[in-house]
Length: 321
Image (tube, rainbow, N blue to C red; front, side, top):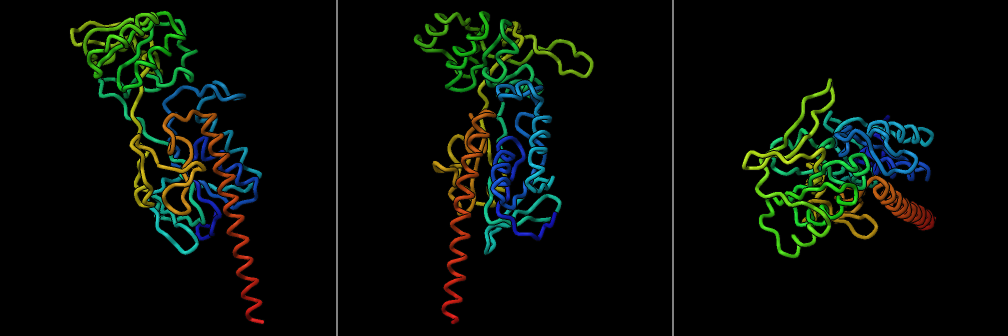
């Protein structure tokens, strides 16, 4: 690819949302480049679920298939991280970690986010395997097993009530939430969810099996006891902030994601955000749909800009005559 070329759209992030936007824009005959460092949010998971026709596909395979789909449309790729940005007359120049840069009229942030895990020993090791977030994504695979829900946010009570849908054996660990209200305790017990007493001190693991991650076998409480769990669900925090986003100057929301309007525009002219960069709860299907919608909006604005350029050129010719 030609790094000096002016692209219509620079997409930063090559996960499902970024590649979906690239597909729509490529099919619209736009000149598109995707900058991607190859670290999608769902990389720790064994498989991605709930994506029709691709249910159970490994995340890396899903990305590889998506890249194949883009082949006929001339979408270009830069396999590097985007580190900074500066304004240029035509739009933006995005700097990459290899010292290069890519120019584009518009920038679409599909950078995802980083999950901020609970401060519990073993959480990072278990993440994506024995520590899970979305029961819609992973509940079926651990159905009818002993499950736990770690109290890590105000929405954890609802998550415990929801996880009960997949198993009769669910334990809620209040952990940092402290004492539960009488109403919350009543709702949990009426739903058949047990409540563990005490603060969680860490994950208990079983022995490793070859190269597979160590399986979670429970959560250890401050009294030394271990409550058996084959999997634990939690609500992690979200952080979509990156040096690139700081360089662009985008406003951020209180939930840690990029602030956008109803069509995906950020607070910065010619910069858009899609998927988890703008919505921490967006799963694969809505992230792809969001990217489709934003790509259509970006192309519509590009059409307006193209028309304006033509009108200005016509007026210049007329004045010259």
